[in-house]
Image 1 (cartoon, rainbow, N blue to C red):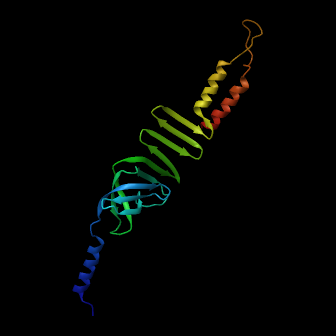
Image 2 (tube, helix red, strand yellow):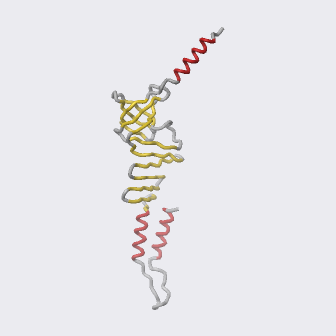
Image 3 (cartoon, rainbow, N blue to C red):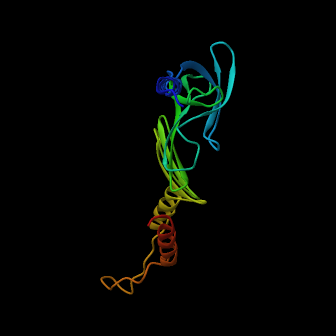
Amino acid sequence: MSDPTREFQEALDKFVRRRVTTVIFPAIIQSVDLETMTCDVRDLDDHDLFDVRLRADTSDSDGWILVPSVGSSVLVADIGNSETDYCLVGTSTVNSVTALVNGTRLEIKPNWALASIDTVTFQIKADGLYLKKGAESLKKILDDLIDQVNLLTVTCAAPGAPSTVPLNSAAFTAIRTRVDNLLK
Protein backbone atom coordinates (compact mmCIF):
# COMPACT_ATOMS: atom_id res chain seq x y z
CA MET A 1 0.00 0.00 0.00
CA SER A 2 1.32 3.46 -0.88
CA ASP A 3 2.01 6.14 1.66
CA PRO A 4 0.44 9.46 0.49
CA THR A 5 2.80 11.48 2.68
CA ARG A 6 5.87 9.76 1.25
CA GLU A 7 4.57 10.14 -2.33
CA PHE A 8 3.95 13.84 -1.71
CA GLN A 9 7.46 14.27 -0.25
CA GLU A 10 9.07 12.50 -3.23
CA ALA A 11 7.04 14.58 -5.70
CA LEU A 12 7.98 17.78 -3.85
CA ASP A 13 11.68 16.81 -3.79
CA LYS A 14 11.61 16.07 -7.52
CA PHE A 15 9.86 19.39 -8.20
CA VAL A 16 12.40 21.36 -6.14
CA ARG A 17 15.42 19.58 -7.70
CA ARG A 18 14.24 20.61 -11.19
CA ARG A 19 13.88 24.22 -10.11
CA VAL A 20 17.18 24.83 -8.39
CA THR A 21 18.43 28.28 -9.34
CA THR A 22 20.37 28.44 -12.57
CA VAL A 23 23.94 29.59 -12.07
CA ILE A 24 25.08 32.61 -14.08
CA PHE A 25 28.78 33.39 -14.01
CA PRO A 26 31.24 35.74 -15.74
CA ALA A 27 33.69 34.48 -18.34
CA ILE A 28 35.94 35.67 -21.18
CA ILE A 29 35.37 34.72 -24.83
CA GLN A 30 38.20 32.58 -26.22
CA SER A 31 36.76 31.80 -29.67
CA VAL A 32 33.52 31.97 -31.66
CA ASP A 33 32.24 29.46 -34.23
CA LEU A 34 29.31 30.78 -36.30
CA GLU A 35 28.92 27.48 -38.15
CA THR A 36 27.94 25.70 -34.92
CA MET A 37 26.63 28.91 -33.28
CA THR A 38 28.79 28.28 -30.23
CA CYS A 39 31.73 29.85 -28.44
CA ASP A 40 34.47 28.74 -26.09
CA VAL A 41 34.92 30.68 -22.84
CA ARG A 42 37.25 30.73 -19.84
CA ASP A 43 35.67 31.40 -16.46
CA LEU A 44 37.32 33.51 -13.75
CA ASP A 45 38.82 30.35 -12.19
CA ASP A 46 40.64 29.63 -15.50
CA HIS A 47 38.35 26.71 -16.41
CA ASP A 48 37.65 26.39 -20.12
CA LEU A 49 34.12 25.65 -21.27
CA PHE A 50 33.57 24.56 -24.84
CA ASP A 51 30.57 24.76 -27.17
CA VAL A 52 28.68 27.39 -25.16
CA ARG A 53 25.56 28.25 -27.17
CA LEU A 54 25.33 31.74 -28.66
CA ARG A 55 21.54 31.46 -28.59
CA ALA A 56 18.88 29.16 -27.16
CA ASP A 57 19.31 26.53 -29.85
CA THR A 58 21.99 25.75 -32.38
CA SER A 59 19.71 25.01 -35.33
CA ASP A 60 19.66 27.08 -38.49
CA SER A 61 16.18 28.41 -37.67
CA ASP A 62 15.52 32.09 -38.38
CA GLY A 63 16.59 34.51 -35.67
CA TRP A 64 19.25 36.88 -34.36
CA ILE A 65 22.65 36.09 -32.92
CA LEU A 66 24.76 38.57 -30.96
CA VAL A 67 28.32 37.57 -31.76
CA PRO A 68 30.70 38.55 -28.93
CA SER A 69 34.22 39.79 -29.59
CA VAL A 70 37.08 37.46 -28.67
CA GLY A 71 38.47 38.62 -25.33
CA SER A 72 35.25 40.30 -24.24
CA SER A 73 33.53 39.74 -20.93
CA VAL A 74 30.33 37.69 -21.04
CA LEU A 75 27.78 36.12 -18.74
CA VAL A 76 27.18 32.39 -19.12
CA ALA A 77 24.37 30.30 -17.63
CA ASP A 78 24.04 26.58 -17.22
CA ILE A 79 21.08 25.03 -19.00
CA GLY A 80 18.79 23.10 -16.70
CA ASN A 81 21.44 22.83 -13.99
CA SER A 82 23.61 20.88 -16.42
CA GLU A 83 27.32 20.57 -15.84
CA THR A 84 28.02 20.39 -19.58
CA ASP A 85 25.42 22.54 -21.38
CA TYR A 86 25.79 26.33 -21.24
CA CYS A 87 24.34 29.35 -23.01
CA LEU A 88 25.61 32.90 -23.44
CA VAL A 89 23.19 35.31 -21.74
CA GLY A 90 25.04 38.61 -22.03
CA THR A 91 28.10 40.19 -23.62
CA SER A 92 30.02 43.39 -23.03
CA THR A 93 31.25 43.81 -26.60
CA VAL A 94 29.44 42.76 -29.75
CA ASN A 95 31.63 41.95 -32.74
CA SER A 96 28.62 41.61 -35.01
CA VAL A 97 24.94 40.80 -35.17
CA THR A 98 24.00 37.92 -37.43
CA ALA A 99 20.47 37.35 -38.67
CA LEU A 100 19.43 34.00 -40.05
CA VAL A 101 16.70 34.44 -42.65
CA ASN A 102 15.50 31.41 -44.61
CA GLY A 103 18.84 29.69 -44.05
CA THR A 104 20.84 32.72 -45.19
CA ARG A 105 23.16 34.60 -42.83
CA LEU A 106 23.14 38.39 -42.87
CA GLU A 107 25.88 40.03 -40.83
CA ILE A 108 25.91 43.54 -39.37
CA LYS A 109 29.08 44.84 -37.74
CA PRO A 110 29.60 48.01 -35.68
CA ASN A 111 30.24 51.06 -37.90
CA TRP A 112 29.09 49.24 -41.01
CA ALA A 113 26.30 47.06 -42.28
CA LEU A 114 26.76 44.14 -44.61
CA ALA A 115 24.16 41.94 -46.17
CA SER A 116 25.35 39.18 -48.43
CA ILE A 117 23.27 36.54 -50.18
CA ASP A 118 24.96 34.26 -52.70
CA THR A 119 27.03 36.63 -54.86
CA VAL A 120 25.10 39.82 -53.94
CA THR A 121 26.68 42.10 -51.33
CA PHE A 122 25.24 45.30 -49.90
CA GLN A 123 27.49 47.19 -47.51
CA ILE A 124 27.27 50.53 -45.72
CA LYS A 125 30.47 52.02 -44.30
CA ALA A 126 31.46 55.44 -43.08
CA ASP A 127 33.15 56.09 -46.44
CA GLY A 128 30.22 55.08 -48.61
CA LEU A 129 27.72 52.58 -49.93
CA TYR A 130 28.73 49.41 -51.76
CA LEU A 131 26.45 47.27 -53.95
CA LYS A 132 27.96 44.33 -55.78
CA LYS A 133 26.76 41.20 -57.58
CA GLY A 134 29.56 38.83 -58.47
CA ALA A 135 32.29 40.89 -60.12
CA GLU A 136 29.86 43.69 -61.08
CA SER A 137 29.43 46.75 -58.84
CA LEU A 138 27.07 49.69 -59.01
CA LYS A 139 30.04 52.09 -58.82
CA LYS A 140 31.75 50.48 -61.81
CA ILE A 141 28.55 50.59 -63.86
CA LEU A 142 27.98 54.28 -63.06
CA ASP A 143 31.64 55.10 -63.79
CA ASP A 144 31.34 53.37 -67.18
CA LEU A 145 28.07 55.21 -67.88
CA ILE A 146 29.67 58.59 -67.19
CA ASP A 147 32.64 57.66 -69.38
CA GLN A 148 30.25 56.85 -72.25
CA VAL A 149 28.32 60.10 -71.77
CA ASN A 150 31.62 61.97 -72.00
CA LEU A 151 32.35 60.16 -75.28
CA LEU A 152 28.89 60.93 -76.68
CA THR A 153 29.08 61.88 -80.32
CA VAL A 154 26.12 62.49 -82.61
CA THR A 155 26.14 63.62 -86.19
CA CYS A 156 23.78 65.98 -87.96
CA ALA A 157 23.23 66.13 -91.72
CA ALA A 158 22.99 69.91 -91.58
CA PRO A 159 22.56 72.64 -88.97
CA GLY A 160 19.08 72.37 -87.51
CA ALA A 161 18.52 68.87 -88.93
CA PRO A 162 17.73 65.98 -86.53
CA SER A 163 20.75 64.19 -85.13
CA THR A 164 21.49 60.53 -85.70
CA VAL A 165 21.73 57.84 -83.03
CA PRO A 166 24.87 58.37 -80.90
CA LEU A 167 27.91 56.57 -82.24
CA ASN A 168 28.36 54.80 -78.86
CA SER A 169 24.72 53.69 -78.64
CA ALA A 170 25.76 50.04 -78.29
CA ALA A 171 27.79 50.92 -75.17
CA PHE A 172 24.69 52.50 -73.57
CA THR A 173 22.67 49.36 -74.36
CA ALA A 174 25.37 47.20 -72.78
CA ILE A 175 25.35 49.39 -69.66
CA ARG A 176 21.55 49.08 -69.44
CA THR A 177 21.93 45.28 -69.51
CA ARG A 178 24.48 45.46 -66.69
CA VAL A 179 22.15 47.66 -64.62
CA ASP A 180 19.30 45.20 -65.26
CA ASN A 181 21.51 42.34 -64.04
CA LEU A 182 22.47 44.20 -60.86
CA LEU A 183 19.27 46.03 -59.89
CA LYS A 184 15.80 44.50 -59.88
